[in-house]
Image (tube, rainbow, N blue to C red; front, side, top):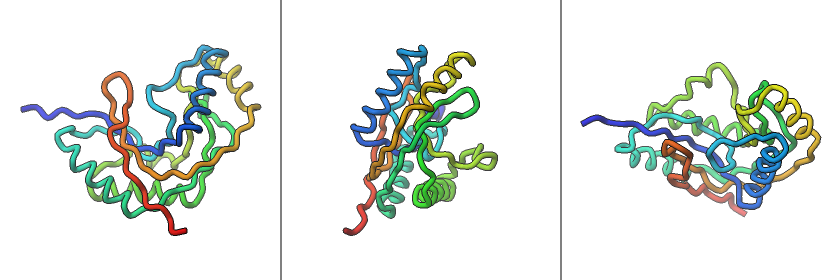
Length: 186
């Protein structure tokens, strides 16, 4: 029997109002500059895509559940826009100490319990962001889109109360399971 793998990634998915805002920006970029987006809901990636056997999905779910039960909800601040080279446009997510610590703890937990490692983590630091256009613009269209986007104001916040595991179906990403985080004591 051949053990196949599937692609998964782990993210923070904003609440509906912020997803609507991000989807509006994505639509506006598409209308103005003929961009299209990745096939996933708006999100902040914490663990980039990795291969995992669907037959072992219960183990992955158990470990993410264990991790989530030990973490409190995390504030996320979206402030302005940014770019990666001439390939990706995104809503900038502030690198707060809490968010950096949360991502680091998750990466450490996944490595120690499941052997999941981001091979690029040693070469680049965690840069939280919410992608609105990716890898599909000509250099000219990218510069036009960036010139327009960088002038748009954005300052939003949300309290992320869940961790989300997404799975790729060969065409697009779907939510596989969500894991509630512990609310901080009031």
